[in-house]
Picture (cartoon, rainbow, N blue to C red):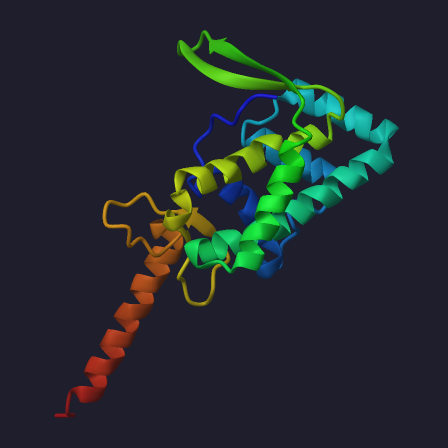
Length: 212
């Protein structure tokens, strides 16, 4: 399975994965509502190509119980990682340890072979992981490795939840120089917040201005 090589709006793969549960809060289907939806997300992130996705879809038809178990595990990992992402360094010991236990449990199953692949289109090199054993279980490995990297490198201090009002559930990695980024996306939540502040300022000015 290739490592994801596409840019993530959230900044990191594990945060992008956590954000797949934002849809229900906006009256839309959860990204992980079905195994096929799970595979579609993995393909969009670059973790699967079309050929591998099709092969896993065929296997899911042949082994529905295994596919269902893999989907359930993906949801379980996501629910464990969300509180860690939302609270960052302020997460309780219980939240942190729960995430570490789940990450280690998955990493303990990451049997396979790592290789270096060359992309002739742009001359770049990237690391790939060819899993051995349960192909369904291996789908989560790059995601938990991304979360593990955040813990090891200290990136957790830069993980934020969007400060939009009304609340936005998205989390993101703050890569700004100041470290004070507040919104998941300036074009959406950021612009809405600016528009809200502007309306409030105009309303306040009108209240203070005496009628002529």
